[in-house]
Image 1 (cartoon, each protein chain N blue to C red):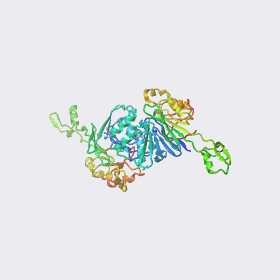
Image 2: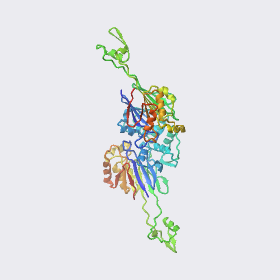
Image 3: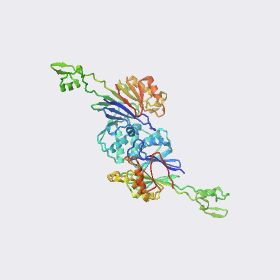
Image 4: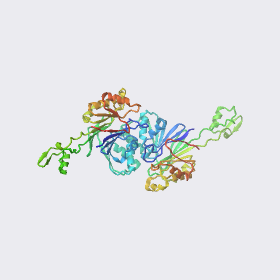
Amino acid sequence: MTFELTILGATSATPTVGKHPTSQLLNYNDQFYLIDCGEGTQVQLLRYDFKFNRINHIFISHLHGDHYFGLLGLLFSMHLQKRTNDLHLYAPRGLDEIILTHFKHSKSVLHYTLIFHPFEGNEPELLLDNEDITVTTIPMNHGILCCGFLFREKPKKLNINKERLPTNLPVPLILALKDGEDIFFEGKLIRNEELTLPPKPLRSYAFCADTKYTESIIPQIQNVDWLYHEATFTEDLAHRIEEGTYHSTAKQAAMIAKKSNAKQLIIGHFSVRYGDLNILLQEAKEVFENTVLAVEGHTYQITA
Amino acid sequence: MTFELTILGATSATPTVGKHPTSQLLNYNDQFYLIDCGEGTQVQLLRYDFKFNRINHIFISHLHGDHYFGLLGLLFSMHLQKRTNDLHLYAPRGLDEIILTHFKHSKSVLHYTLIFHPFEGNEPELLLDNEDITVTTIPMNHGILCCGFLFREKPKKLNINKERLPTNLPVPLILALKDGEDIFFEGKLIRNEELTLPPKPLRSYAFCADTKYTESIIPQIQNVDWLYHEATFTEDLAHRIEEGTYHSTAKQAAMIAKKSNAKQLIIGHFSVRYGDLNILLQEAKEVFENTVLAVEGHTYQITA
């Protein structure tokens, strides 16, 4: 089952030529989930050949402009493309007022239904639970209401061990095996594990949005497979955090990865001051070796 | 005196890769005036090497997103660049509420003073009158409150005709000549025009924003030097206007240029359906020969 992450933007605060603010597109089983939507996101989607109308769920971590100033443009482009399917928007309360204020003054009515799901951010909250995944908020520490999002794959039907399967087993019993049940066949009880393959491990992705170094998130993301954590600064600029920017260093991102026993760390939200991002990568790798940079346009396979 | 126009975006409705929604930068005497601010405008300014902080006046024609969705990002980038000089924003009432709603939910306070000048759009209104230019609204016909902007150069001091100037003429009398006064010198009245060069014609630029074909604007822009008029469609799609899009065809833009006796027409706001824009250019030229396309990144000299 496809589970992959494409980086649409990984720079902090201000876009520049070729560098876009935060946005990520998660593809699970060809269902597309957009995470944050900085200015220019709709053009980034076009640049990397993603169709707007494949996106049915948008998650906005917080209401700083570099995480949502591209949202209204995307919503209107979907409208102009005559979208008809519902769009679910998960965001802090307030974004609804921002959107409605624009609608009022532009006298706009969307062709499609936009369903707003506000979250509070005080404690983890289940936002979405469909046949493929669950999505839960991860409360961050960023000065204003800000949440990351934990995407967890849900258990699938079991695969049959074809080498052991009796050739004359009726279909209803095969389906029962795939559902994990033991079966009675030809007068005998057959344990499920005798005829099925072990279930694949369930994969997970934690998007940890803008935040100060915050160990309170560790229990929730313990043993996550892929962890995105912001890494705005190098350690020598840690004083910028004390000055109230509520961001993290690359080393701090790596410490969170290590303490939460993540398998893989991906860092982003880089300050534009860094021409060469390897300085951030090296700093993180000294603490947590399995680190990669979030690179615009790159797609990463979420592996267990 | 510099008077030039740079096109930052000339596409309609939805940005695509390499095509940006409406934004123009007018440079008069190294004072920069931004007209409309579609999504991506701040990056376009960077791409063409314009400094944000040289802009002290921003004019927004109307509150459709493709004309202002880049504004909040630009305002915040100016803030992050520690701007201190005042910024004047001229726009329909409502943009203030949109901006304040974002400020409230992002808990933002700008470093600099943003001065909001709302306009009504029922009749021409003088928005700005400084030592260089005047700017007046041009009420358009676009379904919601929408104005163009008429930029007029102000009279300058006269130039002295050095070939005729008496060598012993005192400086105060020279200054009086430059101010257009007649003078008494060595017992004689000298008419101003005897010692000065004829004043240069005053240049003007009319930005005619999104609109249906509307002859009511013609008296106000009569004899304008450079006229920007939107040209979203070709004539064969004129029915799209009847369907309520409130836009113009290239031919209609040219008819306005002809009837207003403009010297030069520049067309823009092109529907993304046109891969080759020459079809729009040719249609306009059949009615008004002095037509050019608004091309992103190009700078046009506003000549009389």
